[in-house]
Figure (cartoon, rainbow, N blue to C red):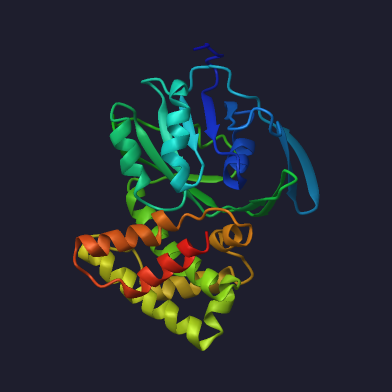
Length: 294
């Protein structure tokens, strides 16, 4: 591997979709940032568009530099294959950070790399990237980071210096479980009703499904000993209201005929239910509905 300037940490980004590209932009200037591209002939740059302003951003390809941090932003179901393709980028000192929706892949990667420090992150940043390589930055959110497993270390990323709003949390698993529950309710229901988030509260059938799904998800998580930090029905309604015009990432994927993250969202909930002999009728319906669309 190549050495690099040690006055900045080296950061490799795996997955240059919306959130990966946004984090690359946030970290440029404060890290030595490299892209681990699946397609060597793909676009080497992207355009950030925010409030009518445009900024051209280029991320150099990784050329064998020693990585302090590998930030994984591919979709949950792509994680294992993607990391296996880039094993040469992971040294024993590389911290691995998973910034994704879904749950379950974290423990799989922890098992694969028990000697590496594994972290996770969860973000409320609003961004989407179109086929022309334009990243539309819709709204500044908070990204929370925390240690998960392996050798316990401090995160090497200089969160206090990179752009955006960031915080370290002592219990990132709680953050991940909370987000899993919300995603397991809102995402598949927006697919079922083919609507923006806010519409789920306006129709009798979709509102009934939302309330029933919240109850079922909470019961299943309780059976596994996983407690949410809020009442799921209240929080889901709040999020639907505050993001009323948003199209969920799962519905975006379905409309674009892309594979969804349903296996690591509703699929994970259904597996917990089976493990604990708890009913998961509506979650199974959601899982099969979305799964059969691809």
